[in-house]
Amino acid sequence: MSVDISVIMGIYNCASTLSEAIDSILNQTYTSWELILCDDGSSDNTYEIAKQYQNRYPDKIILVRNEKNMGLNYTLNHCLEYVSGKYIARMDGDDISLPTRFETEIKILEEEPDIAVVSTTMIHFDENGDYATRHTCVEYPKKESLVHGPVHCHAPCMLKTEVMRSVGGYTVDKKLLRVEDWNLWLKIYALGLQGKNIPEPLYKMRDDRNAAGRRKFRYRLNEAHMSGLVVKTLRLPKWKYIYMLRPIIVGLLPRFLYNYLHRKKLGAGQSK
Image 1 (cartoon, helix red, strand yellow):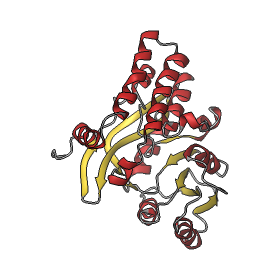
Image 2: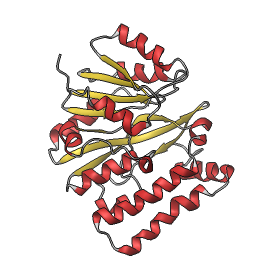
Image 3: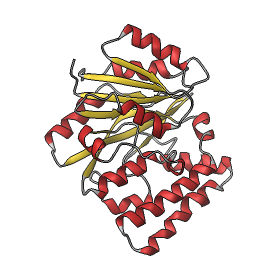
Image 4: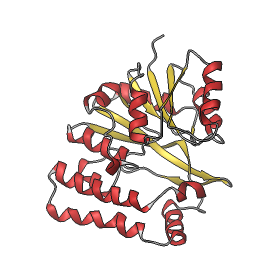
C-alpha cells in the first residue's frame, strides 16, 4: 500500500515515553503515512513496546533494529532504507506531534514547490507540563544564518524524499553526532534549495532534566565543528569562524547556569 508520508523515528531507551509518541502519530488528521521505527540497541524494553505496536498495526508500522548502539545518524539512515513515501517526516520517541502537524506540513510542500523542507514551532514540556514555546527562526531562513546554528527544528520537520536522497541522507561521522540536523540543512541549502518554518506550534518536545543531562561537552565540540564547516562549505567571510567559540563557551558553563539561561531563552514562566 502506497503512502504519502514516511515517518522515521530512531528509538533508544525511551520505553516510558514511546507509547505517547506513537499514539500522537496514530492520532494525526492526515492518515496516509507509514511509521518506520529503528531501535538503536536499547537496554530497556523499548523494542518490546515498539513490537507490540507493530503487531497491532502491521500495515502502518515497520520495525527494525541495529545490532548495537550506532548513534542517531546511522539509525535514521537505517530507517531511510525502508521509506516509500513522497515525503519524509521526523519524530522522536519522547516527543508528541499535535494532531494537525502532518496535514499542515504536507500542504505547504505540495502548494509551494520551491520549498524542500518545512518545520514548525515547538512547545517545550517536562514532568510538570508545558513551560515554554520555542519560536522558530524566520519564516524563510537564509543560508548564511546556518553559521549560528540549525535554521529548522529537526524533530518536527518534513521534507521531500527526493531531496533527502539527493544529499545522501544523514552523514555518519562522530563529529556530527547531535548536530546531524544542522549538517543536513547545510547540505540542502548548499544545493540552493529553500526551507520554511511554520510559526504555529505543532509539536511538543520533551525537555526535562534527563534531556539536559544528555548535553555533553563533546557535543559542544561537534557544534563548533559544524559552525566552521558552514563557513567553509558556503565560503562565508573567514571572520565568521569566530562563531565556533560560542558552543564551547556555553559548554563550559556550570549546569545550573546553563539550565537557567536555557529556560530564560525559551521564556519559561511567561504566558504563551
